[in-house]
Amino acid sequence: MTEPLIYELGSPGRRGIAMPDPDVPLADLPADLVRDDLDLPQVSELDVVRHYTHLSHLNFGIDNNFYPLGSCTMKYNPKLNEDIARLPGFAGLHPAQPAAMTQGALEVVHTVQEWLAELAGFEAVSLQPAAGAQGEFAGILMIRKYHHDRGDTKRTKVLIPDSAHGTNPATVVMAGLDVVELPSDERGNVDLDALREACDDTVAGLMITNPNTLGLFEEHIVEVVELIHGCGGLVYGDGANFNALLGIVRPGDLGFDVMHYNLHKTFSTPHGGGGPGAGAVGVSERLVPYLPGPMAAIVDEDDDGRPIYGLHTPEKTIGRMKAFQGNFGMHVRALAYMLVYGREGLRQVSEMAVLNANYLMARLRDTYHVAFDRICMHEFVIEGKVEGSDVRALDISKRLIDFGFHPPTNYFPLIVHEALMIEPTETESRETLDAFADVMIQIAHEAVEQPELLHNAPHTAPVARLDEVRAARNLMLCCRPIPAPEVYVQPQASAT
Ligand SMILES: *Cc1c(COP(=O)(O)O)cnc(C)c1O
Image (tube, rainbow, N blue to C red; front, side, top):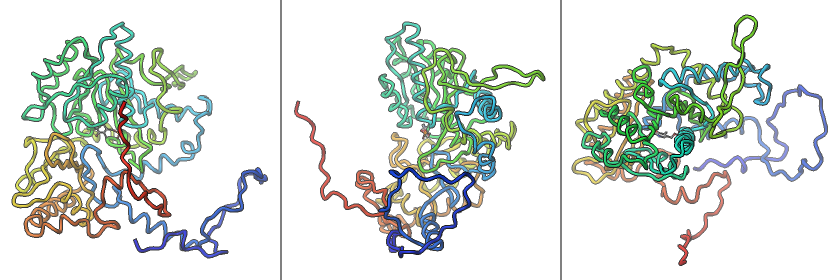
């Protein structure tokens, strides 16, 4: 980057602020909080606007261009959701206000709970968890507590297919249980023989993603659920791929006992800079007493028969996952989204997501090898290799950046060699899908004719090819460069 940092721009006495008149009485600041050595740049409004506008151009987001990041469901975040979440009645609330003053907000939380329960066929939903991974953690803690409460303490194993997202095994380990990996069969389903063999009275449950991270619907899902229930285990559904099922299949009807929803995926709330997310968790009847709380509930009715809302924590709850009611602003956005689409519209969301993925897969099939070539759901996985070239998935991804596209998910799921996992989502037009497919096909030609174009990509980004390991280990988040340590010293394993 050649642009000066804003810290280098200032000149003493330059000002660019117009503070609004205070709407509260003036008061002196506590003397011990006031500093006179604060080293901030003194810049004009124009300098500040240019600085931040420039920075915003360095970011890639769903508002810039196509973002086919498989499994993450990077769909458009409707701006209407933002307007609704900013209504003063929502944005100005304090979470500690008493229920009598927050009936509208509690009704929002309650309505989202009800809609999510209805959409996935569950008995109840808690909006406490702040992310999918936290929803998983809540779910596995509930399963563990359910077994313990029945005195069934030898159930320590959780079965997980080898196509699973890394958060699944991480969750199980965090909950103090043991992971047993299940292989996939040649059609990308869970291998039923391996599952049968693993089922015994030490199994606490199964964590399954359906459709799985290959974008494939589990063809034997009913048998899988029966096998697990048959040996006394519970079924955890990783609902991150729920975008493929809205209004079509209800995991609760398939016998799932618990599932998380990623409101920031399926229900279009933003995935912004690491947060805030919302990973609601829904359960079948037997797990209702264990849900994390507090949840919104109808506690009474007024003289006209209208519901009065309050907070409720189930009696055997695993506890709290998050302060107050979770990320309330996300619940408001998700409700706005659900109400805009309604029952039929939500089904159409999934139908279009599946159609778009199949269209893109069909356009790429002759150029790239599709890992498991059958009708896909909302995403599919190709191998990032080109015949007659030594390029890898990473090279293809980096070259996509030169064309303004965000790379697909790389090297996941782990069971596909050089995996590129592509999820277009329902919000993209046919023109965008065609533009992306054309570029992918052009890149395959370049891979043979000018492979160095790919090896050295990206050429147009603010930083060229990074050493990704070093970038992750020496993460620099400060606008003033901090000298990196000269040598990275690998911690030595202790001899004892
Ligand atoms: C995104 C995702 C998760 C984790 O969700 P977060 O909200 O990112 O914590 C888990 N499983 C799958 C399959 C996912 O795609």
